[in-house]
Length: 301
Image (cartoon, rainbow, N blue to C red; front, side, top):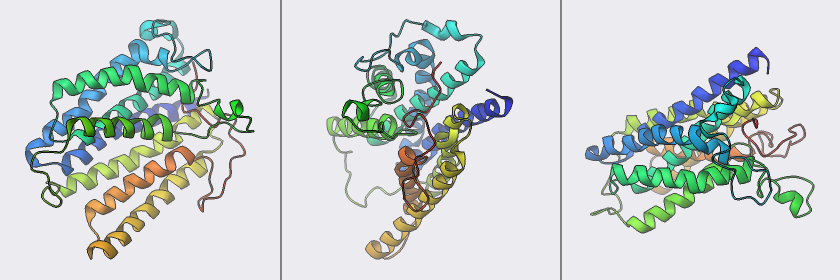
């Protein structure tokens, strides 16, 4: 890896890490004032806990030798001592850690106002270990999802460039399960609980949009920057279009657009473009021609 690619790898890692505080602002502004610190600490708690777990054994679990393996051996290089002198492997592992962190933190929005910090950390550690680390191996680490197209006789693999499966579907399913288990917030009715701090919501969405350039285009440091232009343009265009679409729908449905709606539209657009950011033109036509590994987001060590 040349110095320019390595510099981008460090920058992209920092951008994705910055998304977790952005998510904390976004979620924190949406809840009641008395819950804002608790809500934000769930994201920061996930940042601390999942980082340590990823370094100890999560990175080892995120790659498999057999297509049908559940996960990699967590003790194969416990604490990453075996790659301590390999800068390229270390930065790739650090980049992967930021995805594990933000994916776990995303779940916390579904349990606003009705979960304590201690039980949340226990859940986050168990979920990251038993769900995220194995699913990352399935999608990006040589597992069955990555090879599903070939297994079914198709000419291409599953196209999930930056996390539609491992990140968004994965965290969304966990969030739905937690919401069902914990039930509704006490006294919650439609329109009764408005965001306590709209500027905080918009700030959080803006930070997420900023960091998402590392999220989507970050893996290009392992692909000689071959698709970085279309990835960056799609990350701008899809998100901007989603903002406009949300505002139009709000105007038709509610009579006026809102700042929270604009922020929600931005996050929705970011999520929508993530898995396909390297494979579509700005108007939605397939342009997958150059990426040799269409289902990966960090170079394997």
